[in-house]
Length: 104
Image 1 (cartoon, rainbow, N blue to C red):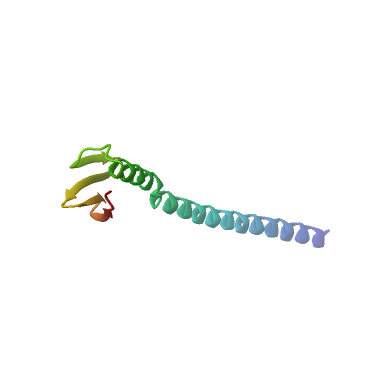
Image 2 (image 1 turned 120 degrees about the horizontal axis):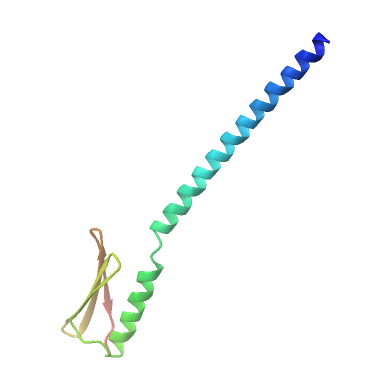
């Protein structure tokens, strides 16, 4: 009988240890996935890229008056005409991007 009690206690401790290890592994995996998805969402620039393409189209087909400024979410967009060129500038949090458009 004494041997059975030791075996039962040993299996109980093994089960608790395995459960704790499984929980730790799932916590690490969950935090890693959360970090990856958060970074992906922060770096997603598809909405501003679509708006820039739309403004390029409007500018090339001369349906927008220059100079043009717009706040798009956290982005500041500016279109300026310099001689025969059109300069598109968009910035967010200190990062500034420039694009030169071909004008017909």
